[in-house]
Image 1 (cartoon, rainbow, N blue to C red):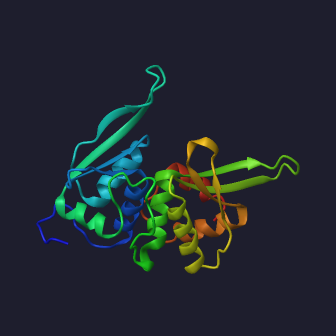
Image 2: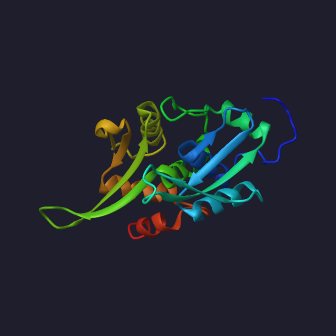
Length: 212
């Protein structure tokens, strides 16, 4: 990696690993070799992204969707930093990464912080009632257009814990896959990703904390 003066401090830490998860799922490396975009419908997440990186860049607003009457309001921040961009390339990220994403170079000691960022960025935590027993059920899901990435996540979870469950499903014609964890494994996952955590999306944590 070329040694240039960087606006972003490139140094592994829990909050830096969390941001890597956010960029992996909801970030975009522009084709110019310099700019990184991060967009989310959760303003809280964009604020945490900016705080973790120590940036003062402005947060803008954009709208997604084809129907002008039902567009989704999103919040966006853009960073311009060649050194940081090249670091992201070095760990395995790339422009137009959604379908080509594969395993990434994440230090083992920061993997759970990285995974929390992935789930906050493009995952879900849901509670529902079992149709027969009416007992509360829990699912953690992580979505990606790259099944190889989800397989790597699943394998990494198994390699770094006693959590051996989870399965990957294709979601019909939308060409997106999801990694799913049932109730018991979801609870194990919560204890791993929220252990010693400082940064997280509050609305997802509030669901998880009921089971920790």
